[in-house]
Length: 340
Image (cartoon, rainbow, N blue to C red; front, side):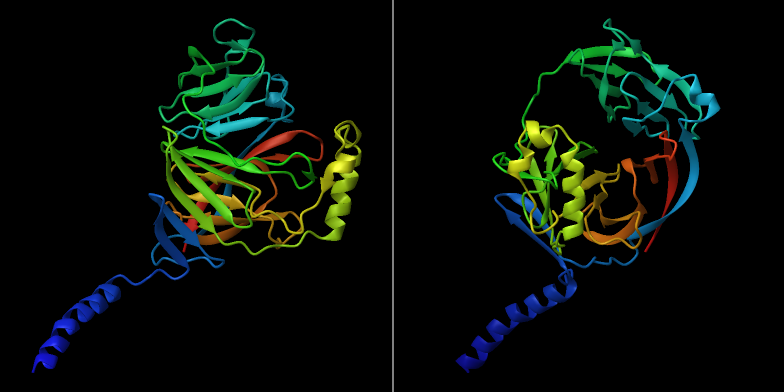
């Protein structure tokens, strides 16, 4: 009789555990846990499909800003150093010496500020960014000042470069130099800073708030891709033409890792989706593979894209810069059409 009561006593908790597990099935290919007080999301090699949630997209070209076109020739633009896009789709381009504003169909609106050293003037515009409040900010590398302009392009203020906190990035050894480079990439979205560096075999993205506190880690298992001999030979020939080959002793210090790093670069859109360009084999000669993680940090899909630079994912659009055969550059704006 006692044994029967004991069996019933243990049966109820077991039944409760079964019911809980059946209501909360473990997500296939995704693990979540807390490590040192920080949430960690671990993804595996294959995407985790979530019913009803988009996992990839197609692109529909909307317009181009061609620096070789007649209507822009008077501006003296040849190359595009940096760009950003505001919530209304207005585009801001930095050529280094000047910052230019275009509307959401690619039409030129105005030049921002002017060359000089007075308030509202600059000599070398870098780190161009639209802030969360809609201001345009950039760093004048010649005068070591941050400049801020309102959405109408009117100068607002200058601030000195005084960091309020530091985010430490793992140190890269300099006694030997990888000719693949040491990628460190970061992106800012919705009050969060996403940072990753190629110091591990797997992808790891650290997410910080604007006070510099680590609030989340996103990890992604990576299938290591060996570096082909032909690739190494091509890179070495390119470096031999650089002054660094002799002057900085790259000739003696250089080496190649056995495998490619887990990523080349990452971006984050305003909704918190993370886009990671990898070294994985491409479908075509001019295509790169993009891994897509949803706002929760879950790897949901992939997309092949044409090779480009200065990508920006914003307002469900992809903006990127491409170099033409003539040597001039153009910005291409695509609408992103999401699908499961």
